[in-house]
Image (cartoon, helix red, strand yellow):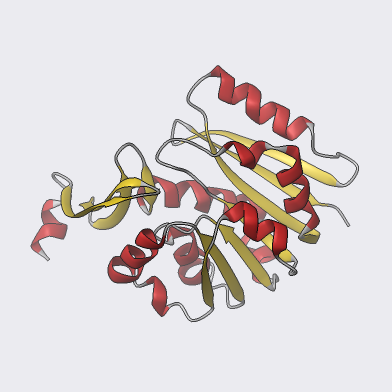
Length: 221
């Protein structure tokens, strides 16, 4: 494809749409691959896929292959789903929760997300879903952004406690955060400090792709 070839020289935008939730959504050929972006940040594939792949590798692909159910809060284009299915060869159930139905339509059209049979996508608010779900999960991936902003509820103790409650023993939370200033550094350290060290082990992986910091929580049986 000629656009793919020229994308190694300069990014080539092929789709653009306004979304009520995510403002402007763009699909672009960049360095030979399709990526999903908003106006100011990468939403799927590209740098985001590298960031979450790094987090999954840190947890351990061998551990992930033994899991029964993965929950993804914030689906976007589904790059982490592709990492799980295509690279790790994870075979079990994946539940993805995404508030923006426009993004899921784009993910289906350009990234074939609807062809992944083990994936169930639920259009819902992540906060509401976490409150009402009756399931427990081996791995919870939190990757929720509105452009470069992260909703405040992600860092509230009530939500954090609820996420930890629906995590199975020996399960993991992989939380992708963005660090743009010192206030964000303070926020992340407060988040980790409030997690019960008798029940959970925490690890911070800072400065991935410049502005991202991963927080990994492991529920100790």
